[in-house]
Image (cartoon, rainbow, N blue to C red; front, top):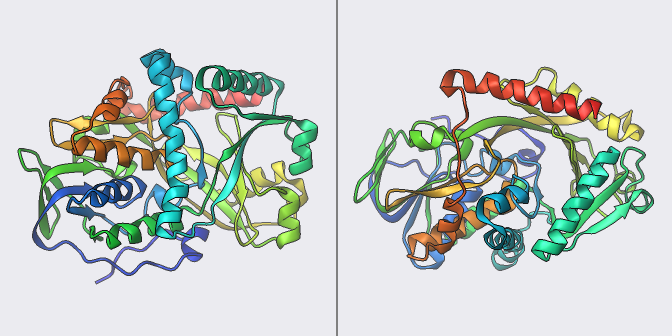
Length: 426
């Protein structure tokens, strides 16, 4: 039998495959059954297993097969939406609570790496960079808001200070967070899987869920087996459809893409980003980049809102990379890959429960490296009877994407075309 393998990327080629976990066969029981062995599902499993509950995780492909193992790897404070949207929805006091919890999500990465000896190439520092004068205004306003209302001071680097770290004529300044950072996402996800297994979590791969039977004891069905549980957790995000249709309407899959150069050598790589920080600009169609542990440049800068893969992906990424780093005009992309992230219409996290015993977390909107860990902890708390934090997230109202199943994708494509035009003209 042929088992699914990871999409080829620099991540998969630089990380040994975990031993294949069994396929679900026959009838099983657990206190909690989780759909999805990505960051959300594994984080939930660890929290519950540490509390002594029996946990089964069902994965349709391999551990970390989706966005968890293919992303840009940037771990950043906050959520996918501007914090102002959360303040407007919940008021400043609750918005501050949610913001503080997002910082907890970043710190959880460091704590889990230390506790479970996960080597995922973690590096400190993240910078949002300005390309245009209006970006400077936006970033400084953001800095003031975070300092005055959220007690989270960030550093502002003007052009000269930024160039000392990243010699680059494209950027006018940077908003820098020493506490955020970046990592190898597949190594981290596999490290969480190993941690979960040491805690007694049973992970089944190549076990696609085809049906969730709701009731006093939910039952997950695959082609070959079932899991009956007291609590169900849906953590498949952009890669799950039809299991809970009321959730499908709230999120949209968006293709996001990244490439990796051949190794540049330590000296040439360090001359691009001398302090090894992660970087993202603030255009709607943004570029983001960082160095790898083996001195490659990892560069993302292409998104598809139509769910169709872009033509000539490698060439497009190469062109965008050279626009940022013209000194790499002789360098090609050795790898180019992509996958889906799940976005909500307002880009805010969509976490909650269906009835009394089905929990979900989705809508990470490209901000999931840190927020997924927090989501797992918040859902685990609620399953154990401490639902205060999940209740706060459930107060964030979400509307379905307009246009229904037939028209919502072309409507989103049209909207994104306007934002890209705005990037280019203003």
